[in-house]
Image 1: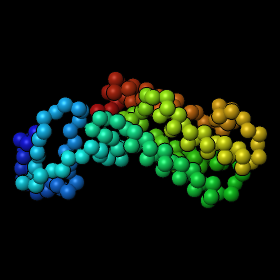
Image 2: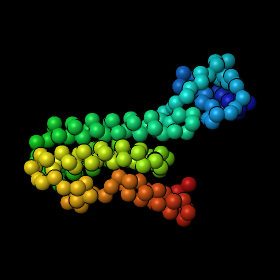
Image 3: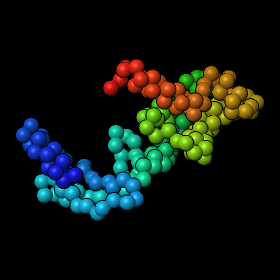
Image 4: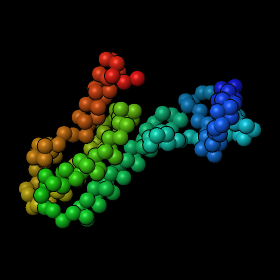
Length: 179
């Protein structure tokens, strides 16, 4: 690994680029691995148990739980902001605002971190579940099941959308539409 780091560092130097050692970490993935100290140009790289890469946080055990916690909190905050910023009582309009502002937070790079445990799936779905409930309460509509609220707002579950995103990516990979 040290040889690979030295090769990258030398290539960068020759290309007039520098490696930002302050943004570079070592993360040993898994439970059994030999201890190692890696460096770039003599600067020892710190070891980390959790890292954020391209907006997705994961741990050295390849758990995306920190990422899921973060996106649920962020999307919940955006959902609350929608209700504070817009006085509309129209559930359809509020649903479109959720789709535009909160749902992208919950779906960014979901092909990488899609959860498999029902408890985690429910945690993500709870963001949309709460939003739709509040949208119905604001209009003083009768409280109906989550599935009925989704049907009324013409929204799929977030779990179904993640499954669709997985299928779309698989199709693109199989038929050469993406590298």
